[in-house]
Amino acid sequence: MFYYMKRLLYIFIMITSFSCKIKKDKHADALARVYENYLYTDDVKGIVPKGLKPEDSIALVKKYINGWIAENLILHKAEQNLTEEQKNVDKQIKDYRNSLITFAYERELIKQKLDTVITSEEIETYYSQNKNNFELKDNIIKVLYVKVSKKSPKIQKIKTWYRSELPKDRELLESYCHQYAENFYLDDNSWLLFDDLLKEIPIQAAYNKELFLQNNRFIEVSDSSSLYFVNIKGFQIKNSISPLAFEKENIKNIILNKRKLELISSMKAEVLKEAGGNKNVEEFK
Image 1 (cartoon, rainbow, N blue to C red):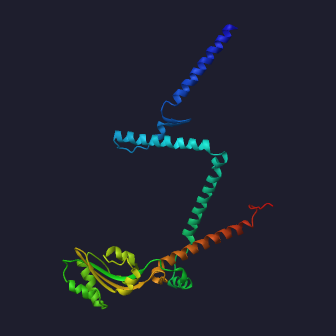
Image 2: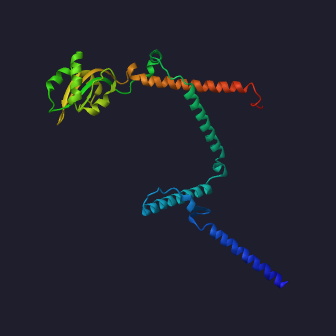
């Protein structure tokens, strides 16, 4: 009997020692541990780019390990302090997945079926029906602007050309600007923000921008090295109704977004209609 008990004890010790050895070997290549979570060598494979210097590789791996430790410490803290209901993220993951799939389908539907052609008549109609929604938040201008060095030739000619309404003078000014101007803007049919012009020209208009626009048409100013010539061809004061030309792109986007919503709404209605004719949908009372 004594021999039998001794034999069992020996087997138990051997099994325990073997188990401990297995446990020890299991984590032999571990780089870090946070409570029961281990980071192994295999986990960091691939984070070091080829050709990196050894010292830089070590620094990169060390940074990764420190990040992993911090992340798992925070996770453990969260696990300890959140309720089981708060930690149940399965529903959130499912809802998020469903949203992603639905969004991908809607995006593909829009890509295939959305009519992106918007006519000028549609833009004008929308503008006329919604004018009160297009209130200017900033002052805007139509402007002709030239910046040249003080050493540039034909300065007196510029003073004539930038004020002139003659097509020939405009052509001469444009040709001159391409050769000598430091900066210029000659598209006086388009609206620009007045503040954008003030960023380019040393004009002291901050005290009252609206009053400045109302009392200045031709502006000639200079700094230490350059001359600036400005012809304000038109302006609209903030809080007034924004002109159609300034809102065209905005209106296009509004119409497109409206079509997208209508397309998605139509798709949902069609899906419900199709479901009503089969046995795959039931509503229980």
